[in-house]
Image (tube, rainbow, N blue to C red):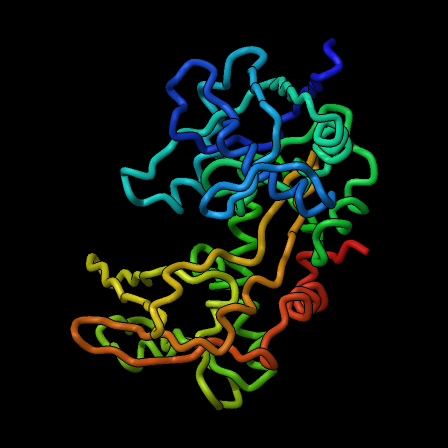
Length: 340
């Protein structure tokens, strides 16, 4: 092998949702991998030589080539479609899922410092990064073949909040992730009933969630049983914002579907991804968290429906902490266990 080259063979743990799935050899894309890897390396290694464009984006001096070994699985098990079909409603966003037996990645760089950084950090980068659509929900998880040592220790090195899902069937990992995330954020009212754990956590702080306020303000979407509420009734907060903000909220009443528009008052935030992501490695599902939610704390949001609207603020900085919330989940429901 040339002294300027590095080669890695990847193991794919979960399918990647890919918009080019009908093309020969479609897989992990260099156009997605390189910018993410560049940012990761620049965070880990000081004074790496890089090129900065007019927009301030930095890129490192190396080329990457990705090749698949064998054909993709054309017919994935039916359960692979479970979460994606639940989440993707716009036909323009419908992508296909691909999984390969093996993928080869080749890096080429004349710069010895860049080459050394790639060799040192690429396996760790894959461990904390997913790719493709719905990557925060566990899709597009890869690792370097044979790289199965000290996984939890290394996750903690790069992510301050790390928990592991308990009692999950990783053969149906996407159902496990979907169920767990619903238990955390919105609750479940299909086949079985479980209150939102986020709702219960905020009730401890005497803060009520926005769902009841929505149904008070827009009674046409309030059908069936009254929405759950805290025993101690105090101020309302847009508490589900802490685990991700969407631009709309949909309610189904009979055969009708009602859409409530959600907008941050200052119009600086259109969407906000969940600070929780899921990483599937072998037989384990990890729950990774960050502090990104802090940037929307205390922000005012407007909920609009049929010409009427009301405003509500997200929890303030002293009212929510993601690590504290996940410890509450661990104690109350034993769905997850902290990685220490």
